[in-house]
Image (cartoon, rainbow over all chains, first blue to last red; front, top):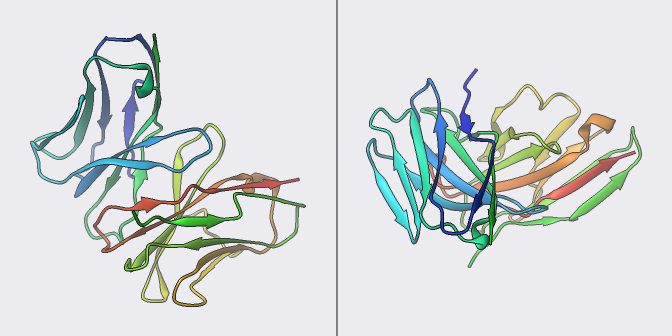
Length: 112
Length: 113
């Protein structure tokens, strides 16, 4: 069974603080996607990483893919209340027909 | 920007009834997926579909579930005899290729009473 462990599950911080969310597996991903999900809505893609060691930036969000392609992190700099939401990582493996395995999500709350 | 659309947004049904959840994937995409998310739990893969047949399905996707692409635009998930535990958000997704980015619809909330 392929598992994606995401941590922390809950994070409550003050505006302006930095934070990091982690996504880990014992398996090697072919790609990993980070999504953000608002209540009652579907996941919205933030970024996809494919190459080991890859770093992608999206404004104040920095995504990193581990060298061995087994882990990934999302770092938010100077968090703002608008960053509040559920962040999901989802991995795809090898030859399987595109199915994504999701982590359990990180519920982020940024207080003004 | 192209998007995946799902209808209805909320479906309420009685236990034992059949429901059909509808999705219109992004028009040039070839791979289609259904996922579900029980309240407070992970998003779980149900099934992937390509070239008019199922590519892969999970253990959840048992004989009461079926998928169909009845025409060139719609992709449906049918649950034949709903159970209380089928209550969940059901998300449709599509991608251009199997290993490409998947785009998700807003979901259908299924409530089985």
